[in-house]
Length: 367
Image 1 (tube, rainbow, N blue to C red):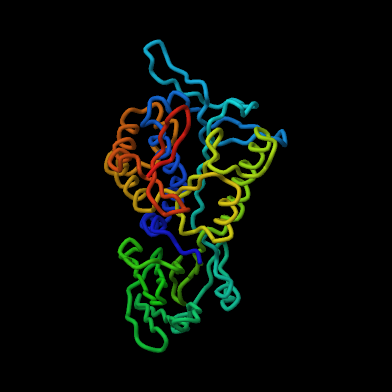
Image 2 (spheres, one colour):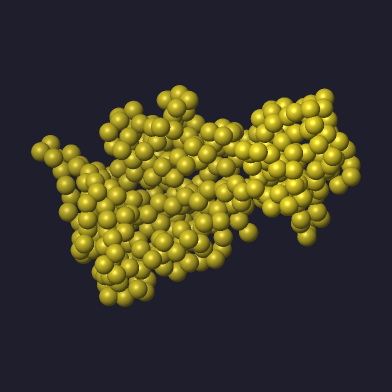
C-alpha cells in the first residue's frame, strides 16, 4: 500500500508556499540526476537535455536526458551539452532517461462537505458553530478506527477527544491549521498549529489537514483536506512505459524488453517512491530496462543545502538551466552527489544503491 512520503512531511512545513516547493521536487530530481550524469566527462560530452525522441508511432516524446553515441566537445576538449531539438533516429541513442515525481494530492474531504451544509460566500470552507461537534476519523481494520471529536469555543480553544477519551485543548485562530496523522502501525496523532509533520518521526500512512479559514461571532469557517499519496502514479507509469515501448520498437522492431540490454537502455528515475502503487511498479518493471529512485532523505538533504546556500527563495534556483549555467548551483548539487560517490539511486529490483557510469561506450548502472 502506498504511503505518504517523508518529502511531503518536509515540504508541508512551508504551509501554502509548500505547493510551490512541492512542484520543485521533480526539478530537484532532475538536477540531481543531471549532476550524477555529469560526474563522468565522457558521459557529459554525450549528454543531450530535453530532446524530443521519436518512436515507432512517429510520436515525439520529450525525455529529460539522452546519452548520444557521438561525443561533443569544444576546442579545449571540454564537454558541450546539447539542448532541445529532435532525435528521429534512435540508432545513435545509447540510453534515454526519464524522471518522474508524483506528489501528494490534497482534496476536500467529501464527508466534511456532505455533513456540513453551512456554505460561506467566496470560500470553499464550511461554517461550524461554537459548541457543535466535528468528527474526523480514520477507518482501519487491523488497529481499529480512530475518531477525533472536536469542539470550537468563542475563547479560541479547540477541545479534542480521540475515541471518546480527552486528547487535549488547543489554541486556534484564523489561518491556523491542525494535522491529523495516522502512522503505519495504526497510531494517530493530532499535530497543532505551532508544530509540523517535520516533527513526526513515524512513517506516515495517511493524514488530513483542517484549516481555520476564518472566525466570527457565531463560529469558525473550516476546510478539511485529505492528503492522497500519488493518485497519478498509474498515469505516470503508462506514460513512461509507452515511451520505452515506442522507442524500443522503432530501434529493434519489437516492443519486448531484451535481457541485459546494453545497446539502448531505457531508464526511469523516480522520487517520492512511497507514493507508487504496486500495479504501477509492476508496469514499469515490465516495460522499462532500469527503474531507480532517489530516496526521500537525499531529496530533503538537497533542499536543505539549497536553502542554506541561496536563502528563502532557494526554490527559484532549482532548474536544469540553472545547473548548466550557474556555477554556484552546480557546485552545491555536485558536492551532494559526490558525497554519496554518485550512489544516490536505489534500484527497485534489488533495493541497492547504484551509480550511473560510462564504460566501453555504454551506460552502466553499478552498486
